[in-house]
Image (cartoon, helix red, strand yellow):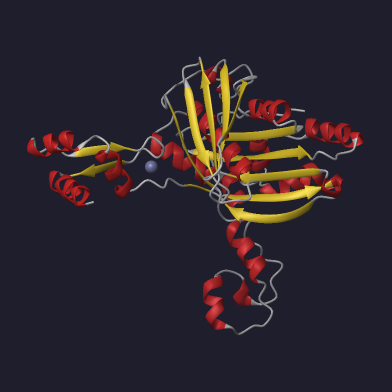
Amino acid sequence: MSDARSENLSENTSDDTGETSYKNTGDNTGDHTNKSASNNTSDNISDNQSPIIDFAHSRKTQLQKHDHLVRGVAADGMIRAIAMSGRETVEAAHANHNTSPVVSAALGRTMMAAQMMAAMFKSPDELLTLQIKGDGPIRAITVTANNLGHVKGFAAYPNVWLPLNDKGKLDVGTGIGKGTLTVIRDLPGTTPYSSQTELVSGEIGDDLAAYFTLSDQTPTSVGVGVLVNPDTTIRQAGGFIVQLMPDYEPYIVDDLEKKLESIRSVTQMLEDGMTPHDILQHILGEFEYKELEVSPAAFHCGCNKERASRATLALGSDVIRDMISQGETAEVHCHFCGKDHRLSPAELQELLDSSERL
Ligand SMILES: [Zn+2]
């Protein structure tokens, strides 16, 4: 069972009505029984006028306005599923790295797959890294995610331009080419787990599905998609992972495969205004789908000046002294978010002094 959804470059003009209606779906107007529950949870806490504010519902409504993940189960727990919206996440990567459309799609698909996979982890300290290496012009993609919905990532060559493929879609498969996918799980205090599989198509969704099925022995369908506006900003991004749990009964497989074959691409569903909740409901509605959790998702890089300082110290005090005497500023580039952290000669001196005091 594998289902990689590919995405097209929007052939429309920059009309983005689809996106607007998608964003608005988080504004739930029908369910609230009092005016104060509708928008601002924090104001309502001190207000305390109504005993029937549904905070859980209000939080969910807030979450649905931005990128978020939705987790659920179906068929008495035989199916586990997760879906997400990721337009802001992929747009952050596009803005940070100035990615071309095909790289936005390749990197975005990989980031969202990682976010959904890491969301299944129990510990927020566990990190998931996906490394894709191929012989195509993008060469390599590296992303890291945790179960807080945070992801960061970069492509070796962010500015690759390719013609659309024969289906009129962004040609991620050619951009990546033939190569390997490495999945690394790293929980501090334990031995990191790493597993490598051959890429099936370089389209990312297929490749992740193959990893789950072959390496993890879990029949899995992965759909991830990014739709890019003509001005190269991100119009839509999202995905889903649907997995069979070890105790599944065989009849489920056929029914689920039939259903997955019948659905539209993720980006088409998003264009139609569907939320991650709607997507899972659409795929698994006939399997008694139950939603368990809604949580935020975002591009997030934990780099800062302190880490940059530590990296600079690793150059050794002789190198740093040299830089100070030449009046040079040290520049530490973060590959994951594209940020440059600068340390002036005075800051370098301070860094040396403080390290020598240790
Ligand atoms: Zn960074």
